[in-house]
Length: 471
Image 1 (tube, rainbow, N blue to C red):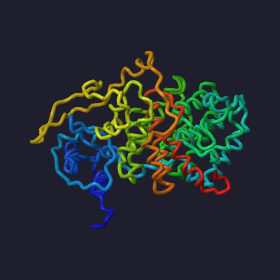
Image 2: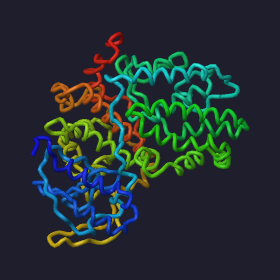
Image 3: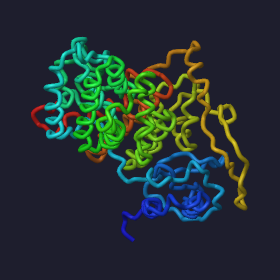
Image 4: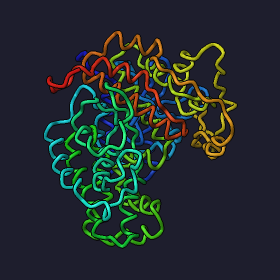
């Protein structure tokens, strides 16, 4: 057997081929559950793994038996052990389209440049967009980015780029953002190394369109949508943009074919337009929209990507725990979103006085009973942290979380070892920044420092593809 053989890779390839078969969606749910249960892997430490929804792996918590989204271990021996279908809950069963193979890239935009051809296509779109009259295209979103005399056509292009980017952390000299320099109202967040740009919500793009519809300017509204679509088409050539660019096209292009499609929604407000756009996005693009539909699941998937980007390391979970421990968590809620292995990794980074996470103290909900497997029992209900009181708790006084300015010792140790190549380092940076941003969106905690990702960026910022702008 070749040295590269991996039990998880082989099991995933087989399961994915089965799930993507057109006949899969026509099978009864119990039949699909049994097919997934028959392919569960068991590692030498007793961990049970199944390949399920969204084309991703899940590991079983050894304490309560629940399944958590978790990146599989690299180069780890495993044995296939068939289990009863009852252990596979409905939410773990892939639909088929959700396992489409193109998941894009988690790289940030430091090191590997945006292709020149893509940047030139954006420049061509931006030049006439910047000359549109502000009276016809008032700036109704992204006002924190652009000067007041900038038309919303420019904002439509910018917003599309940032919404489609998996991790909008850009080299300070990246031409894709410097072409917007004359329109900026203030410096972008970050420093000379990296611009840490917050990812906007779909609501910002919906607002640009909906406001013009309500103002009776349908032609202007459709021009904004056309700019979003043209920008997304250009971005789709880069894997760092492609999944969300494809999703955005699925949402806005129907408007170009049926101009009055969202008029009624626009009359009910920007949020109604956002919901209309999300509703017509096909199921195979669900993962690209998790940040819009389920911030908690988006955080879990971002953590999955972070662990996956660290697969080259001897202890990926330790490094992932180091990056996650840099995120402010004043109310101790993060561990409720992590699997048992990552919870332990995050605790290893905590100071001795930190309060340990206690499963019995976590707020959760569950329905269902148990399913016997002969030697152990599994809860059959789905569990997730209860976030119903998060908005309320955010209004209560709470201590300001300390914001680290230097990377944790574990992160610095990883950086000192140097990831094997520039592309891998860019993936670590992008995944760590995306996880931080997902955490901020979930909790409402504002992040102004990114010490771990910044330290990675400083190691590769001089390795740009364009030698004339290397730091």
